[in-house]
Image (cartoon, rainbow, N blue to C red; front, side):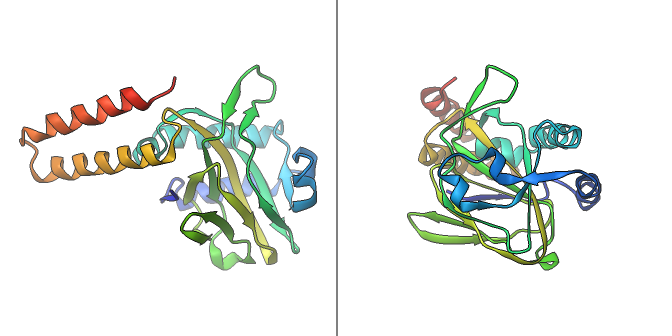
Amino acid sequence: MMHIIPNLLSKEQVCQVRQALEQADWTDGRVSAGHQALKAKHNLQLDQDHPVSRQIGDFILERLGGNPRFMATALPLKVFPPRFNRYQGGGHYGNHIDSAVLSVPGTPHRVRGDISATLFLCDPDQYDGGELIIEDTYGSHSVKLPAGDMVLYPGTSLHRVTPVTRGARLASFFWVQSLVREDSQRGILLNLDDAIQNLTLKLPDDPALAQLTGVYHNLLRQWSNT
């Protein structure tokens, strides 16, 4: 399922991130593309070893770790270091599915891409086009969020970015290896967690809370892969 995480970054934080990115040197995004993606990928990308990329990436990871909605939705085990791309002048990315397993540069570690993530760093009125189109069993979903908001969607999804015909679209993108590999199981756990939180607000002394919480953790214990 697709999930929106609002306000991962505040407006002030987005402004600071964009100022740093505007001063950085961008390269052809096809440098990091696989064989098939070479034909579909037309954008600019910040080198993963660039100091700005590392600095902002670490900041985003910190924000993710402190965001309860992200933690409940993704149930993260590993997060691939955030990367950054820029679309302008007709730049786009054709239909593709992200790699299943990604090697973390400079380390022996690998991350299974259970969840794909895009953090928008420009408001929708700052550019034309640039919609993230995600295909799933329920059809096509067009995503173009306010700066600071993030979308999570299954890594198995076919998706694309439409051409940017005015302005520039800046975003951070990365992948998450979840404790729970199956998207449907993550959805059940999130619904159960939401129900527990709502019940806690309305009936904090209800003994059913302990039972429901136990069910949640027992399901997580059964479904998790560590």
